[in-house]
Image (cartoon, rainbow, N blue to C red; front, side, top):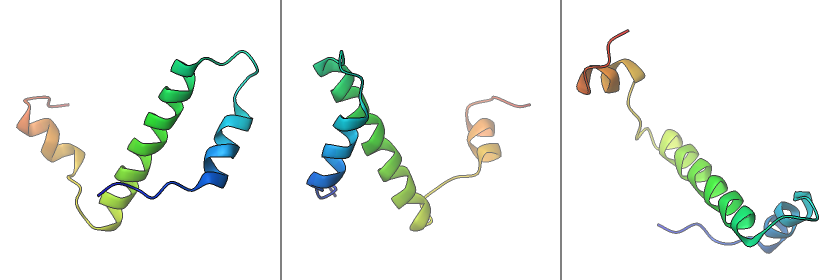
Length: 62
């Protein structure tokens, strides 16, 4: 489910960027923010996997 855009948060994100930021920089910031928000929502809804389980699945043992 898409997250609802909060304009004040978008303005804060832009205001924190350096004056020479590009559109690509902005898109990257938006993408990172979206990924983090989705991860937090998954964690809150208990839709996560233990790191050990994922490593075992892909044969990445410690």
